[in-house]
Image (cartoon, rainbow over all chains, first blue to last red):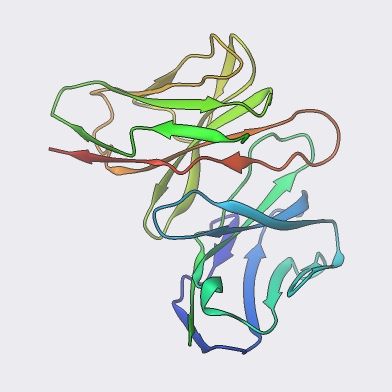
Length: 111
Length: 114
């Protein structure tokens, strides 16, 4: 079993829709939860991160962590065509330098 | 502008050949990383370094080698022992210390076999 599971998509939505991207994980030692966005042929860029359980909001983006069910979500409100990219969740254990990446979900926002 | 520069953008390797991928950062970060990205598999850690002249193997280090002679530079050599080198290679860097230190990525090198 992979430590982090993510539906590869593609997920296709109309412009303006609310998007929900999700990951599940198996290692209860994960404490930091990162979301990266990766455009085609580019490196991942950090969108936001949360520590432990709870919500964090940044503009149109909300990250949510439910440690009891080992479930991570990223919500995008008012989605735009420029949001079309692959979204990678990446949890991390405190004290472990490296990240563990999900396989990424490809999102397509149709104008 | 601070950032991570990877070169070349595209690289072709012949059978039995070693190739070296360059990664330079001007973010003054202590830690640097190399990941490999294959379709449908996300990113996997090859090597990382937390300080100059020191580095550790990641999950898939076989067939790869690195050096860290300068803080700014962390080149990756894909040796002929790596039998399936075709992939997208990503270099990242971060600060070290307490709390979360997010990793920042370069724009990758795409390696293919001739």
